[in-house]
Length: 196
Ligand SMILES: Cc1cc2nc3c(=O)[nH]c(=O)nc-3n(C[C@H](O)[C@H](O)[C@H](O)COP(=O)(O)O)c2cc1C
Image 1: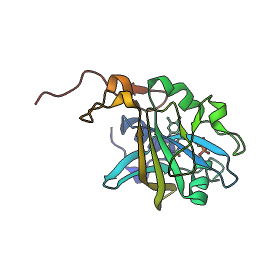
Image 2 (image 1 turned 180 degrees about the vertical axis):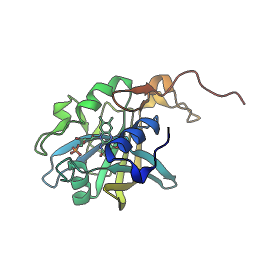
Image 3 (image 1 turned 30 degrees about the vertical axis):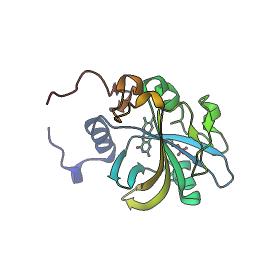
Image 4 (image 1 turned 30 degrees about the horizontal axis):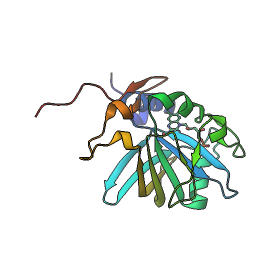
């Protein structure tokens, strides 16, 4: 099948991009409103775009009613956020924080997660997360209807049991997951180390 994109409706394109560009990592973003209310939300239009200094990007749509999602509003207001990585054990809680809830609701409480103070930014990180990146806003770029947010990483938290002294990651301990289309996820680890 072929799809000429300028002749294809938005719903179809969304479905194709979501289900074909896979697996995607998920950024589980914690941010704070101007009033100091913590917010959590997952974003799979996410990746690393630079390593020195590390820069991560997330791409966020508006809500169906065309209003800004809380994450975008909070990052624009405070210029700080934390990208937490998720894992197999945290999958259900991560999905719970993808629900649309009013900004007054603390999603750490909603998903029964523990906020842990960050060192260099105000938004807390998720204590249960295997990895967290404390970020300051580097750049905001609108791309058609999306808000693309680049964050410069100031501090990287990695749970001790994930790294050995040579910085090899123990993926059996990390248990990273990847997002596919629909309700599908993959375990992004296993016996696929290549032989050199
Ligand atoms: C696994 C997963 C991945 C998601 N990825 C994105 C994404 O890349 N961009 C986006 O705009 N919304 C994405 N969403 C939906 C947002 O998480 C959802 O709209 C959330 O309510 C936004 O919360 P906020 O208003 O607190 O920022 C995703 C949801 C899930 C469960």
